[in-house]
Image (cartoon, rainbow, N blue to C red; front, side, top):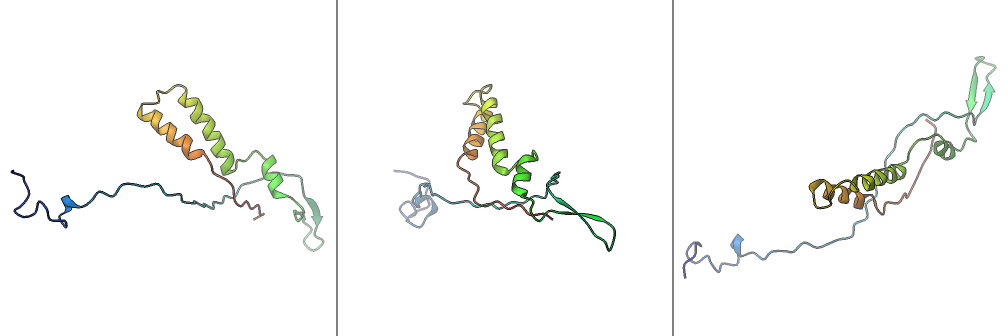
Length: 126
């Protein structure tokens, strides 16, 4: 029998070509991503206060519920954006063959949009 291995190397367990192939396995990994963004929210939900010393009127937002104001302002949370993306992907998939590169990409996008949950939200005036 003839082969292309160097003499004595065909059965050498330390040779790279004789190393066992380690199969890929699936692992469940929790991914937590914290993101922030400063947005401008227009509201009349504040108490105007006049400062006698400098003569200016200030907005007291101590009792403003910024989470509700954000929700009513038309801004999108990351969860909202993911839902919007899912809608676009589903619509795009209707016009694309699933066995194409684009179809596979859209399927991966749709799968990546699934199962995200919001762990923590914070709204604080700057």
